[in-house]
Image 1 (cartoon, helix red, strand yellow):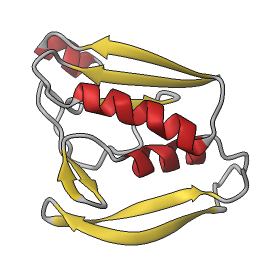
Image 2 (cartoon, helix red, strand yellow):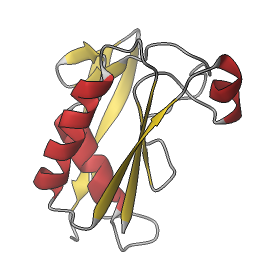
Image 3 (cartoon, rainbow, N blue to C red):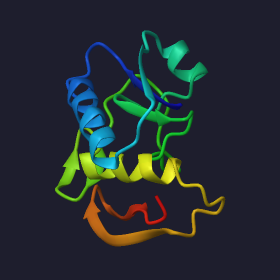
Length: 134
């Protein structure tokens, strides 16, 4: 069973958008047997304890596929570089690709090929493609 955890804080305007996109991505990725847990982060101490990188944070099988070096830990809104520019939640295609990669049966995920890069938030970031072996 795939595990998805959506971490958020109450003041975040984007966690509900992220949840809708997660549901859409599950359908698009054709991944079955997925459990989604919502985890509200309430204090700065809790944010530090769980390494909360901002709201919304999506963890697939315990891993944040969108974390970047230098992302701060704490109660803050998070921005994502998407194919449509900066947004407050990962895109459906990014989430779908992340789900497919997490489901890849090839240990080094060599079948999961990159797609073109997109510019946003002062950097270039590769948006990776889905797994071709599923």
